[in-house]
Image (cartoon, rainbow, N blue to C red; front, side, top):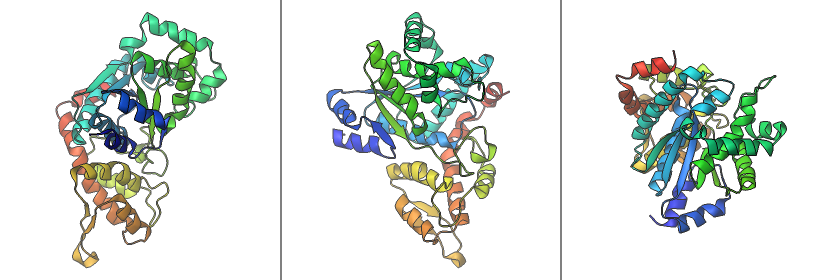
Length: 341
């Protein structure tokens, strides 16, 4: 795969790359670049996580070594979303879930590494740099950086202000060329680019993908029950939640069903060179076959595809996608119970 092909792969379904020109330069100069994503081990993993997992697959296919940071300390710093005594259990759950999801999307995990945050974030050099960067930033600056990610509330805890400082330092201590995250992380990623040079470290390339709308029309969230589908949900649950999903006829805006089709289903189908088929009785016009997402969206906006038919087709595709994850978790029910008692 040449540089042009790698760039095309890395740029698909991307919201922003900062700075974009540095990515091409990196691919030309380094045989095996290194990238990472931080996953705060908080709530149960839902189908929205397929977006980053598919992008990780792209990084690996483009010749990167990729690190998944299982950010246990971050999970506690964010308003104690994960109690301290459950951090290890949540880390185990997240690692297992992501292994299953990478299997489901067909990723080659030869050059993938899982790293637990507390394994390096409690070491003396890291703590020293945490204090150094803290002295360079105000509460206002760190709060602005973390506002899209951390839950502050009316009387914010000190831990939330430490969060973006640690995320910036992670880039240096994980020895990566790029950090990858959702567009909701943008302010923290720019904070990292601004602050690492102040400590004598190089700024990294920041790569961001869109955030998947939830089934209710807002951001998909583990804390909003009807907005998401867990990654080990059974077929009946998938159908039930999709049937309730916000999916107004002919409308694309805030349509989580269409967004999932675009960023997940068609990304996978493109690699497998398969089509998206919606099965319908002949009396309702027969089956519909779509080769690209653009074809699907066009039919939907023209109201040639009814929301219930779209939901039925998506339920079938999602059930197939989740099946390897369900099988991966078979016999590991205790792991989930212990992580979320």
